Structures are given as structure tokens and as C-alpha cells.
Image (cartoon, rainbow over all chains, first blue to last red; front, side, top):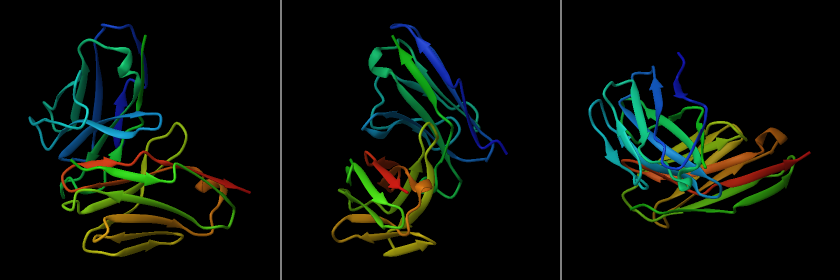
Length: 114
Length: 109
């Protein structure tokens, strides 16, 4: 099992450009999450999904969109990148037992917006 | 929504000493309290968790205690080793998790 994987690992964007981050998991998990991690701020939830075809807003959803067309994939989109979106982005997933269960994190994507 | 406060932000100990990190939460509905360890440049990894129906849980050198009345929970690491050096995050929640801002633990040989 690869666990949770993220693509790409690094990306540099110019202000106003768009991009999509891909998260994939092969553990048959129902729940998937996108977090951003900034220095001194911990992990903040952007959006999450409780199953295929569902999405919900987290703590800091503005400027991001998500889609969960397949159970194993969770996409995070930035339509018009801003320097404030420079961050490390982590995807996570939880097993079918419920979302208050162990979250398994991907390796992260380091995004810089110039 | 939930608010999680974590203290201290940095903690320096000598190898072999104990380390304690404390967190408080605001939402009495929270029922799941995990602790994650994150090494530099790596992903967060779960080290121990506790649910609201349990007051204490131990796994070798690591233990977590939960006081639901006071809404606080703590991570205890005994006999610290240099490889324990990392950033530790607490979290709390019942549908989604809210994370604390982290504690950088430095264990000196």
C-alpha cells in the first residue's frame, strides 16, 4: 500500500495563476481532508469530504475549491493564486470507522506564490 | 467552533528527563484527542490518542491524560531521547479536528 500520496511535491506559481493539487489514497478511506500548515499556526482545515461526491468547508476555505469525484481521490484547486496562499498543504484520510479516527497524512506539497 | 490552545510553544530538556505538553479545548462536544509528531520536513504522524470515555492512556514512554471537566489534556514523555526532538501537535474534535499551534521539543544529549 502506498497510503496517502500527494502530487506535486513542490510548485511555484505567479499571482493569479491557477493549479490543482491531487491527493490519492489506497486504503479505502471514506473521509478525506485538506489542511494548510503555516509557521506558528499549526494545521488548519481547508475543506473535507465524508464520502465520494461530498465536500464541506473547513476553517479556512476562502480561495480554494475541492472535488471528490472518486472515493480514492480528493482534489484541491486554487483558481487565482495569491501570495497569502504560500504554504505547505497536507492531505489526510480517515478509515470507515468514522471521522473521529486516526488521520493518515500525505507527504505534503510546498506551494510558493510569487 | 472548537478552539485548541497548546503550551509551551518550545520545550528544551536534557536526555532522560520527562517532557509535558498541555492543551486546552473549548467545545465540550469534542470526544477525540490525538497527538501527532512531526519531524522537520516530514508529515505529521499519530503517536497516541485518547477518547472522552477514557481518562488516561499509556504506550511505552508516552502517556496522555484527559480531564473533561477542566477541558484539558496533556502529553507526557518519559526518559526522553534525542530522537524525540520534533514538533508535537495536539488536536480535539468530534466531527473534524482542530489542531493546536504546536510545541517544538528539543532533547539535548
